Amino acid sequence: MPSFGDWLIASWEDYRRVWGRLMAVIGAAGAASLAAAAFPMAVAAVLAFLRVGPPWLVLGGGFLAALCAAFWMSTWGQAAALRAARFDESASESLSRAWAQTTSFGWVVTLTCLAVGGAFALFVIPGLFLSGLLFFAPYYEVSGEAAGVEALGLSWARVSARPGPAALRLLTAGLLAWLPGLVPVIGWLLAMLWAPFGLVATSRLAEDLRAASPDARPPSWLAGLVAALSAFLIVALAAASLALGVWLPRALPRMSSLASGAMASGMDPAAGQALLAVLNGDATSDQKRRAYAFAVTASSAAWSAVSSTAAPAGTAP
Image (tube, rainbow, N blue to C red; front, side, top):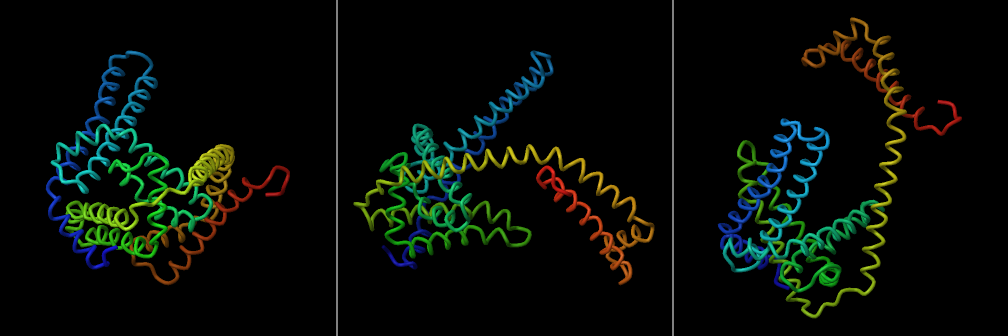
């Protein structure tokens, strides 16, 4: 692989060369995504105003259609942006060629997100490792080199062959794309204009990894790992949603009553004035002490509500 410095210089030269068409692609795809999301909602609003069917059904259908359209168009835009960053083609060519890749590109991104999400659900560290190992799967799909799980396997094989250089360059690209946004006042503008550098730098890195390991082969067991992690994520999300649906209706009334009781009993005029003084920034030491004491009382009541509601049936709160 090229040295770290050579990679940075090459990434900067790539960015200067493709910046115009890359921003054109991002702008066109962004506008198309907004229009695709707004149109179904506008139609639904008109139909609801004309009382064509139940409003909840009309507006709900419009929202669902807008969500699907936005996801589809944004996926197309991501694929087009990757093409613009990697290939010497015009913005219109990137947009038109990416359209045919939208389904396959979206499938690779979905598989990557499911696998990485499952790894994060197991623990944070496996999720971080897997994020780096599978990061370049969409790049290899857009290039036409692989599709589906095979694209994930190529990314795994090439990154695992050089984990240190790949991780260092990924972190550097992310930091360089993020730091300009921290500049006061004009950071938002700098971030908007400079953020695509991260895409160009990682695209250059994907090509460097491919050139360094042109004969890489995806691990034969990766499909099973992706399936297992995806299933674990889906089960974990379903279990968490079910638990939240059971716990929340029980917790909210008790939390509200206990917190209200604590506030009613503990909010004397002196405590109220202390809280206002703290908010205004001119509280005395005695007022700060009173405000702190009241905050501890109210938070203890809320925690008592949560603990008692989460306790198994038959146990004392």
